[in-house]
Image 1: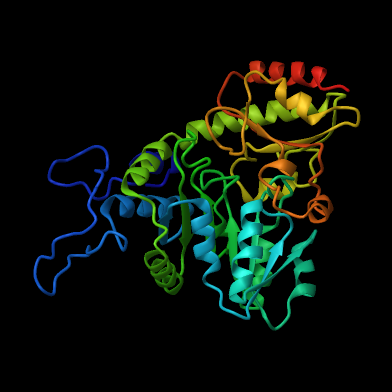
Image 2: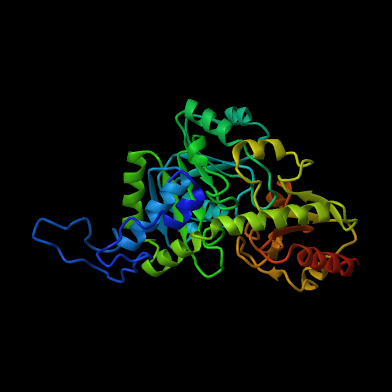
Amino acid sequence: MSSIDTLLVHGANDKVTYAREVNVPIYLTATFEQKSFDDHSGYGYARGNNPTRESLEHLIAALEGGKHAFGFASGMAATSAALSLFSAGDKVLVIGMIYGGTYGVLNNVFSGFGIKWELVDIDKSEDLEQYITDDVKGVFFETPVNPTLKVNDIRGIASVAKKHSLLTIVDNTFMSPFAQRPLELGIDVVVESATKYLGGHSDIIAGIAAVNDDKLAERLHMIQALQGGIIQPFDAYQLIRSIKTLGVRVRQQTYNAGKIAEFLAGNEAVKTVHYPGLESDPGYELQKSQTDYPGAMLSFELADGYCPAKFLDSLKIFTLGASLGGVESLIGHPATTSHRSIPEDVSKKFGISDLLIRVSPGIEDTQELIDDLAQALKLAKK
């Protein structure tokens, strides 16, 4: 299948049984009968493998442009599995700001296992060189960055990392494989919170990881099976179902994001708009060079004299919530939600102020979304 739109709909149906089902069956079984003493036929205990999960994983691998993929119970489980590829004494360079949960698991869990990490701020991929020491074994980053939408150079960072034999991990949650495929640009491991755009309906908690390298795949499968943070069969089924509409959802969400960004850029209540789909955005050209779509996430800073709480509480269509990527428009205040666990001095250094608002447009009527923002901005003035 050459077209990603066709792959979204048909990519998981590779294990059709004698019943010739259109949808992948849900295999609700904890164990499988052995054919004989020495023949497990690929399935034993379901923590290790399950046909429904396997269908999802084949689909994700194909969408990400990879050879292998793994389904997890959450995005954090996927991220934790990827970080488990490092050992005590290894150091990971984390580029720019990251999701608060990732910051938390590095700071409160993996640091306790002897894995070191450093948050570094770079404008160009070659700037990474100055931070690479003998103990640095990996690089982790998001692009665009949550919630400032700063765009990182995937090809450039992958090139520098390969020069120094570093493992690269990219969180692709903000984009999804429909819009951006880091594996095809030289990255070793891609992780995503499938709760977001892949799920798209705010009703699934799930995560995925994808790789091209066979040895990395063996290690990730071992980590997945032994740590046990697997996606359950029903959730895997729901995710396959949701992915079928990923293309039509992302196209509409991206269109809405572009129109909303244009509106906000011209509003006196807004100081700055962060959206790499705007030609005025510093990441515009780079984003265009490494993605198929600019993405549907944006953020903006209110001008002085406007109250974030008043603005958010005055919205009627947008849902005030901490997630993103759903068919319903979601909006949030990163400083007190998604990034609340990050120390204030670190947050402010990377552009997360109390006036920053993160927006995840859904698929509703474009003008009604803009009108909702407009009326709330008027009411937000102190």
